[in-house]
Length: 69
Image 1 (cartoon, rainbow, N blue to C red):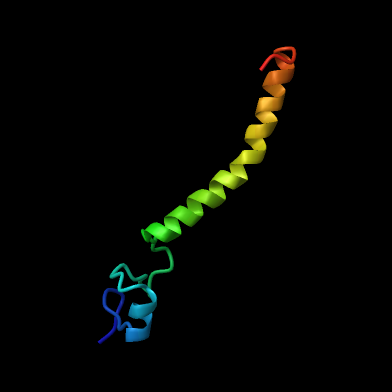
Image 2 (cartoon, rainbow, N blue to C red):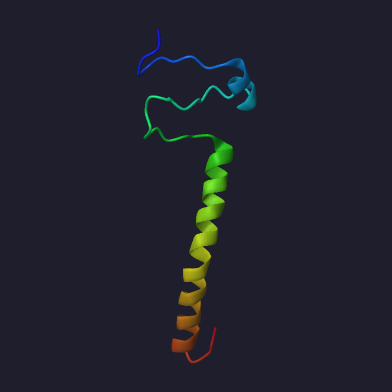
């Protein structure tokens, strides 16, 4: 019997997840994944997104210091 706390997972899905037991609850759209590979991808994406503002801030600081870095 499937419900909000229990659900079936096929063997192919388990194999695809490299036998990682941390499977997303299909009944809860707001569940946060703690898969290390996914977290590392998200971290890399966020770092890349933040690089532009960091570069802008650095340019502003260098300019305000009269070109001295």
